[in-house]
Length: 314
Ligand code: NAD
Image (tube, rainbow, N blue to C red; front, side, top):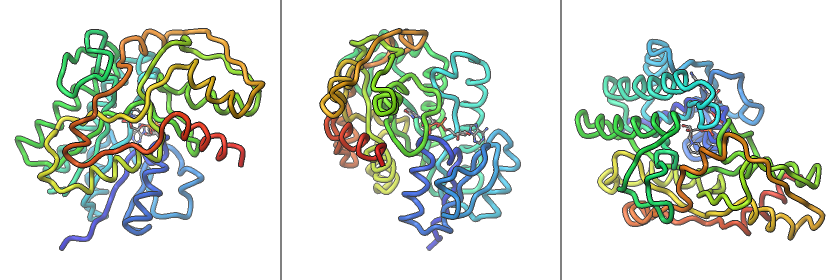
């Protein structure tokens, strides 16, 4: 049997740091190679091998995969929704080419499994907003959503045409305290905790009633690993699975934080990110993920808020 050897690309980002640490716990520190454009993240230092990599350089990536006998690739490098709107052509180029490089090398080198995340941003203003189904109108209006939707099609294509075992989740907005968010529209739900603790007030860039699907990072890491560990024949969706946990508005998360910090106040100054959020679903129907590989979230707004505040106070 081949020994599992994992490459994480984009390991220094919001998800990458926590996912790399979780994978190292499971597979052994030396069997998980972390890579990123950036300098090694402090939390990763001393925990396992680190290589500097630009995923756009296909040749370098290919050499790395062969040299380290890589059997699984997690591709997390991307330009996120809010940053993408500032430079759409760059976002398209990076988000697409990084995926094509990985899928193609996976095909050539018979890589066992590939993970690549999509997003709720694939949905657009014409998609149903409440409990948005897996299969429905998908007409994204942000370049980020367009690149994710095209990426999903490429994943399914490489799976069906070449047998590449690529798996994917449409993450909601992810909330975490260990590593900073990377320029998404749901970043407010992280900033609000830091400002509540430090300033006791927060000015939100979305309006008070903007509902969005969200998930606490421990749930997202567990979902990712459970999807990747599931038997191959259980993975019926080869584009990307809807994934859900909780939905709330800025007003609701502020009220929850107030239970812990009574003097906390919030004000609203919506900016360009309001328009992005307005095009996205309010909640997700993730019944296929539950049915096919047993997905079940653990954290709701109340439990997540208590845990965020407890950890940020440390
Ligand atoms: P992030 O921006 O925090 O991290 C991305 C990492 O990729 C960064 O460390 C960056 O340096 C690295 N990177 C960028 N370009 C690179 C390149 N050319 N070569 C190598 N590394 C490069 O993003 P994240 O929040 O950790 O998101 C990871 C993935 O999950 C992305 O595909 C994102 O679209 C998806 N996603 C995230 C969220 C969320 O709320 N965080 C929600 C939905 C989907």
